[in-house]
Image (cartoon, rainbow, N blue to C red):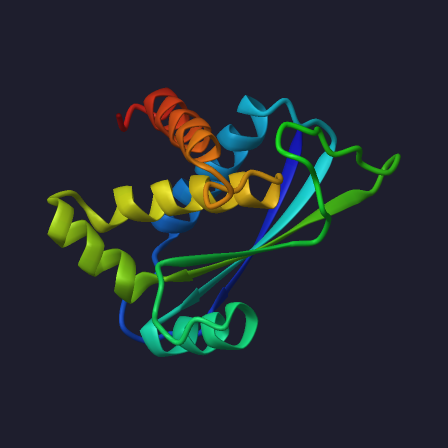
Length: 158
């Protein structure tokens, strides 16, 4: 599998270093491998702050509150369905919008690093791009949590 992650930084609260970009690539890559995705894949990751993600959450989900991460899939996959990539072309899987400000706050509340929280949120969001939705039912929530935990374990972050 070949992965291209496009980054955009639309916030000024946290400096985004190469280590964070590399960790995000690794998290997305391992999530796609775990789900059996093959071919060339492209994912966009945008860093924002609480105000930026609140605006998107309000405009696209009718929820006027800041959240940690939003996922905007390019395709409507069913959970567990493996995307088919066009021959020789990259499949644009979708966009991950991440509030680094919210991730830092959540990490402090939970008692782990901002980097670990960002990695978890990117795994979570990538699963959403692949059609998983924890909000559909308790069973879907349990399934998504299990997948997230297994991928975190693969990354040595259980």
